[in-house]
Image 1 (cartoon, rainbow, N blue to C red):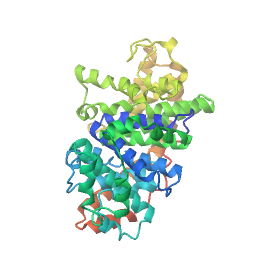
Image 2: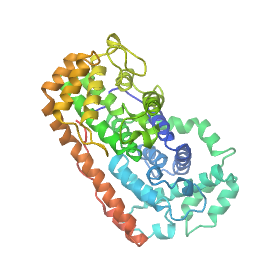
Image 3: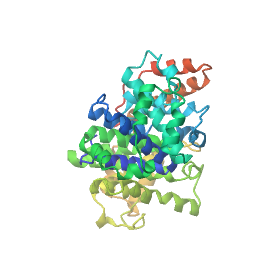
Image 4: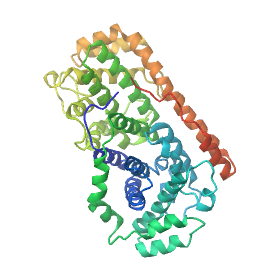
Length: 441
């Protein structure tokens, strides 16, 4: 699958920031500041190519991604940090397995590692060691200045006390050249050179698609069911698109729209997402806001056709859907198709309190919705005629994802149980990235 319209790097970062902001805005702001500080420290060294530096900024933005899962946020945002390795290990595995930044995953793993240990790590190149230190130093600068409200001079004085032990002298030299007149937030927001740099080296369609996939995987931090539901919806949408003989461009739009259709669920409380049964009226009202939240995450940066496909998957032909009560005249074939794929995915999905509905029940529910004028009759009939094939191939496509998640969880559990820090690091660095990462057509 390829994202079919150009979108600049600043827009991609904006979507990532808005998305993560719904989990915890403290980490989103912190990540933005650290990325900016890393750019200011490494940008003038000439050690990294422009594409490398761009990707490093993206990795620095996400360096604490594991904290969304491990709930270490409050402890982590302190200048003196102890026992905050869980988020580093989980973030490492996540970036390595589920992002296009896997080559920088060791810097996520080791961004709290003291130089006296890092310097001796034979598995890392000098460039990667420098990146680990750049993120470490930038991380501590932002916590000191933005959280604890120390001045840059006070912050650097404190960091320099760790020269040669906690921090590499040559990396502290780069930090000591920073000359901020205002807060990091203000310096970051007004620095046109930084944002121009991010925008001048456009991401490829494949890279953009990989970042969008990564957002879907982040939803697992809230709801594993939502991730598997999205994977199934995307696969079913693709199969229906093939059966309808959609053009390649329309098929790509359907794939991207279905992939992104539930991003707003990142802001829905877990107790609602994972509620074991029928939701109350009040809870359902909250659940329905996920569509509007998805639109806010897009921020006007998504192709209009793809955005409509993503945002209209709960509309019905007779005007009883949500959020805009659209009718048949308002809905394209592609939008109707994804709405039906979403229903099939929900019916076939397993939850903590239910298994997949049997085929007879799925056929009965879809047929009734068709006869009641809720969904497109032609597409429903096509789906029912090919239901066995659609469900079989969706199961096959979903299997690699489930296997990778199991691999991540088992490896994280093993690392957590290791008694010695060096053993944890060496084990993590020895892991191979799963080869079958093509989870969609």
